[in-house]
Image (cartoon, rainbow, N blue to C red; front, side):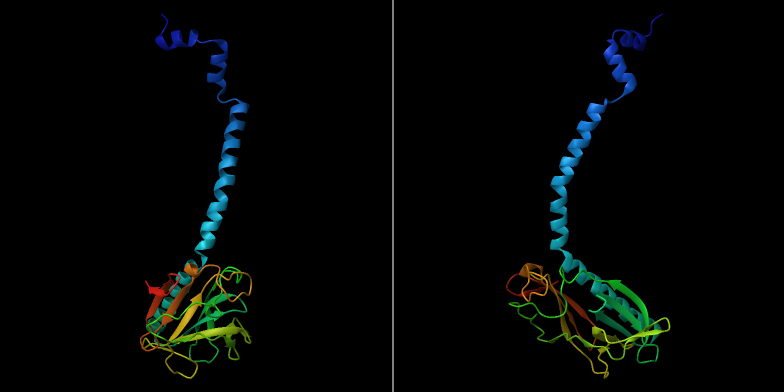
Length: 225
């Protein structure tokens, strides 16, 4: 007795049976690969440009997270932890002062290449966040430094904020500091103008309470978020 499946298979041509047995042909696989390659070539530039557009925002959020982590360390351990932006190493640092001036490095995260995101100055043509009209962060040579293992790292260009156990943020003289820190993509390497004002971001730090505010520039003014 011939089963239905056997009858259907028997009615197929020899070529159709070979296709069923052998799967896809080499030509079909090459066509599929070619389509995937063409679609990837079309999509990748858009993905790259999209990521590039949001690099200043991504870095702002990373920096804010690290500031909040430094503040939490200070509250939990009841001693001062220092947050630094190190332009020499192009990194953001958390340093445990642990009763000493230099302190010990706790954490370091790399920052975007300065061709993509600058943090050392306010971009040209951009007004400060208002309110508050605080001073802008100033980078200077670090004569105190910090320890990495047995070595002390000094003479880097840094901006530092010291988070204390009472929640306040102070400078090296223990004076509360309230500052603006800007993150933005330069038009070209070292250029003072932003590639796009809509990509400019800012962080305001309130020294008395350690509170942090995030700002986006809308092309005319900073808007809080």
